[in-house]
Length: 254
Ligand code: ADP
Ligand code: MG
Ligand code: MG
Image: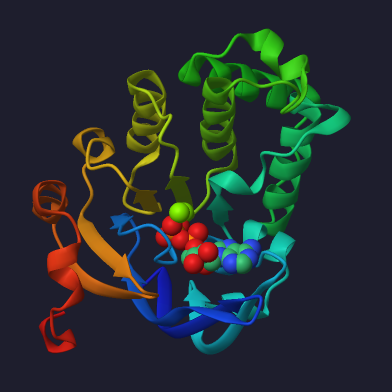
């Protein structure tokens, strides 16, 4: 059983080919780290999976739970269990975090055929999630991403993940400014949500995050495709040797 299956995916942005034959299979419960040089297409992969405007799929296929992901609207993808952490950081004036989160959770529950939560039930859940990511409960009353600091945005993302309980969570940690504190919030969030059903793609430039989140697999994405896969030790090798030694490797060795 495979949760996510990406086959020979080619995608472009503004007529420029970015993904050039990406293949990736993820089983339930697995954590996959994606590393690779700048401009390789890591963030593009997340955007393509989430169905973001402007990211065109040229060929290939993606299924989530056996269903064609590329055919789905953005909202349908979220309801099907896909979560992209950097999908939300927009300011929505006049809408509180609590309201925003409830709408998102309600939509997911409805898609799964579950009963809607009462406001009181949801408030209780949301307060617990706040505690888990070390945000004050008053945070729920604030506007969505209104004047959030970098650390608060990160905590907010992880809180959304905890409440939405996605099947596949994509975290894109490109931030060079991700300090130890924020790294631990991300890692604790992932580790606390990790179970035999949930899967994660953790995109990161830094091996260090993987000291806190132990990936089952590490992939190197270079020039729009995966050029090397391995276990967690691959991240250590990359930390020591960089990426250049991979570029010339024949594809048969993948
Ligand atoms: P990574 O996350 O691996 O650093 P990206 O996926 O952000 O790489 O970018 C891959 C390539 O796509 C880069 O060459 C980048 O310049 C280009 N690209 C990404 N987004 C856009 C965009 N909106 N418009 C034009 N080019 C883009
Ligand atoms: Mg980049
Ligand atoms: Mg990126």
